[in-house]
Amino acid sequence: MPISPWRALSPDDGDHYLLVERRFRYVIEDPEHTWRRAWIPTVIACPVCEADTGLRLAYKSGVDAVVEAACPVGHTWVEGRVDVLQWMAYCRFRAGRHEADWLWLIEAGFGEEPPPPIDLVEEVGKAAVDVAKYGRRKARAKIRRKVRSTKKRVGKRVRNEAMRPVAALLRTAWIMQAGGVEPITASRRPAKPKAPKTPPVSAYRKAYGVQAPKKGPKCLVCQDTGRMTAPGISVPCVECDGPAAAALAAAERRAERARQGKHERPTERARQGDDERRTTSK
Image (cartoon, rainbow, N blue to C red; front, top):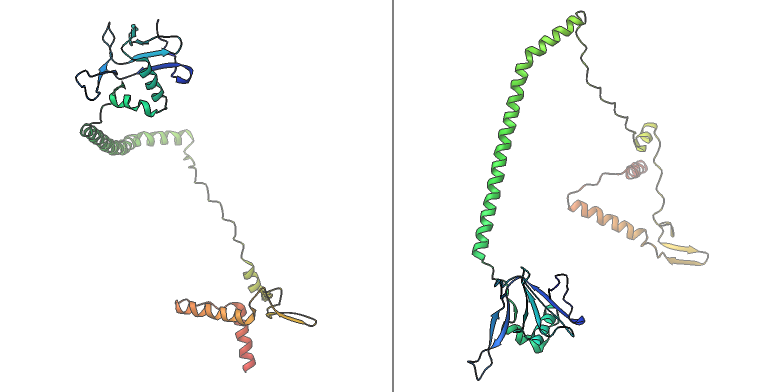
């Protein structure tokens, strides 16, 4: 009976089907070892065409009595050398259920042959060849690009020089047809004028001699007095540290900037205060 290639591995449903790309091996006990059991892996092959790769093996619980096999050509046969219990355990292993009682079967060599080891020397050689080809291709493309750009530039110059008499002849014919009036050459579009920049408010204030508005108190709770007062109550402000602490902090900031070599520009309010102090001293 042919094995359907559309079957899927499902040990829980009793369908033990596998498609092996490499050679498949079953194990037999070595008769020469009497005091310790040893297993000999043996490769399965098609009895007709002797194909040993790309085989399909299947077993349906409750339906089949032995494991059936099929080769890529289409030959099918009954593989009685494969133990049914071992085949079912191997299918469960391939499905992701690693049972400790059957790990010896995998170690003995039952199942599909492992892939061959990677030949690092060959892979490094292939990688070096590919990198060299890539670099050579990029260098060749760069040279072609330079040659192409040079040829294009020289060709354009040669064509312009060759077509210069033709252009002069066409221009003369146009002037004669227009009655001796040279054609008007289109001028470049004038640039759009930039919109005037709006000056800041400080410039207007300076031009009209308007004084800058005075800043209000920093603390709206105590009005920079450091204490909250009411009839019969005077307690320290909980929102700020008071004018003394603010003055000390400002002095510390100025001293730090002076140590760093940064000089503050006097503000308009500071200049007004200096002018008032000078007037008072006089």
